[in-house]
Amino acid sequence: MRVCDVDPSLKERLKKFRFRKETDNAVIIIKIDKDKQLVVLDEEKRDCSIDEVREELPESQPRYLVYSYAYEHDDGRKSYPLCFIFVSPQGCSPELQMMYAGSMRALVADAGLTKVIFECRILEDLTEEWLREKLQFFK
Image (cartoon, rainbow, N blue to C red; front, side, top):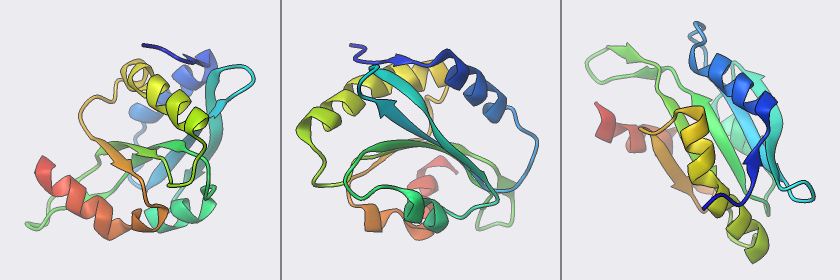
């Protein structure tokens, strides 16, 4: 089920982001324009920790994050997973939660981000420790 369409310019931005060559942490924050029923770019940041990203997020509205993370494995190897994180804080309106939940699958498919998908319901939990713990399953 597709509740909202994805803005074509966002699709293009996500495609470029997927194939970026930089090795710093970066994020694309995505929101839904409720009036247009369109998934759109909210903000893009480079050289940012997940903690800094969390501080930018609204406390009572969902957001999608596409986060490029410089992940150092226990054995010293580095990888750069592209994580799709659905942030849906407690206290969001049921209408918004449904719009975001109903649009997520289409956005993930359009962005080609089908492997590393996480959901965070408590904004304070969105930390580097939380992300590293989630990534342990993708060694």
